[in-house]
Amino acid sequence: MSEIQNQSTHWADIMADKIIREKGDKELYTCASGITPSGTVHIGNFREIITVELVVRALREKGRNVRFIYSWDDYDVFRKVPRNMPDPELLEKYLRFPITLVPDTTGRAENYARGNEKAVEDILPAVGVHPEYLYQAERYRSNRYAEDIRHALEHRDEIRAILNEYRTEPLPEDWWPVAVFSSFTNKDTTTVLGWDGEYGITYRDDELGRTETIDIRTTPNTKLPWRIDWPMRWVKEGVDFEPGGKDHLTEGGSYDTSKNVVRVFGGEAPVTMRYDFVQIKGHGGKISSSSGDVVDLYDVLEVYPPEIVRYLFVGTRPSAEFAISFDLDVLKIYEDYDNTERIYFGLMQVNEKKAEKERRIYELSQVDGHSIPMEPGYQIPFRHLCNYLQIYSGDMEKVLERLPDATESQKERLRVRMKCAWAWLQKYAPEEFCFSLRSDGDMYDATETEKAAIRELADFAAEHLDKLSEKEFSAYIYQTAADNGMDNADFFRLIYQVLIGKDKGPKLASFLKACSDKAVEILRRY
Image (tube, rainbow, N blue to C red):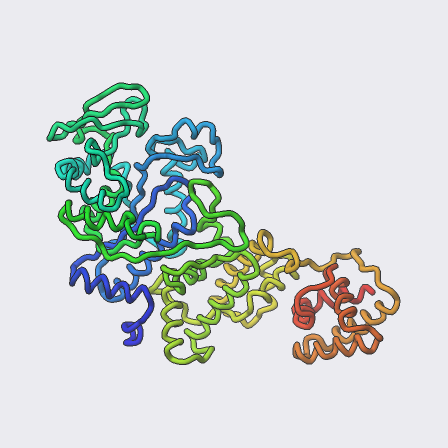
């Protein structure tokens, strides 16, 4: 790695340096992320995952050994049925159960939590993310945390005092730092009544009125509440870095309490950083796992190749809110990425500070940090690529025939990009952006004057279209309008109607050059 890269000012490299500085020189650094799989894991949740992955990559590029763990908090309570889940009436019956005991009505896996987990685990390798997964339901139900639960019980008063510092109303004297799922109903509708000072906990099932004493070394039904569970696991896993959403990192939020509770377990809080929300533009709906109004990584990868998905997060500081677009801003996002690529390969000249920044963004945007492309992608604007796809009705190989100078490597990347472009055109592109060429027999009802102008343009295009530059051919289009006594706007509207049945369309000269033989064929019908 070059000296410039070692001195990178990218936020991931800065954070990696901070971790090394604050946690000291270690044989192994542990970076953590995690979520409750209470519903479809959306693209906002992905921001935490990719934030950690980028810091992990930066640490590894500095020669450090890193463990990247991702915790599925699948022993949390099932509180709400998302709207996008099938058979909601069945799921309603499992409210207040741990989500790992809720059935998966999608049929993807053995339980509800696993179905949501598997969807994420299957897609993350596509964007170069390979964490080690930890399943908290399995850990709690196999009593791996029995001693940690007992430790919390022994330090009950100390933990309560810490939590009360951040509460407007103090916890009651009979509060216990443990939650119990009823062995009678599997629900968390229980009240802890007492602890015997060893491993026995007595609780009441509040729905049935029944009481039971359980041994935390053998029961699958106990767990620590979130603000105690999180810091306990920091110590258990030796976590050095874990970011948090702005809700967790607000003053008095769960990070503030946890960084004090962690000392009860003999540890220190990890280095952290705040990440903000991700907005969605041109797709509709608020992102919420529990409501079911979600845009997930599958949706985004349908419109953007993996390296551009990464680019969206790499190029934005985690603390800054940003939008992922499905509307016409898609064009700008592709253009911005292509500019970064051009700077990386020296095809676009900028000052050295800007070049250093963009080179690092490009490197971190690649799915495999060890396999940076040897050449830039084929430099065709995304708008033009969309036009080609619409001209050839989505036939990617016919589009590639129009780009004979593309290398095999560039063609491979172009196929991925065209698949995304075609999906965007079919599902999200504004109606005014979309078109299709008129088919045989589908004619515009032109006047004789208009037909004469169309024929003149057809004859000239047949002979000169492929020989003239776009600028030269554009000048002739205006000349044709003048020769036939037509206003420029009326003539342009006429040609668009003849070709695509609309009053407006892509920039006419470049569009005609892209259509070439197809355009001449349609014009000559008149």
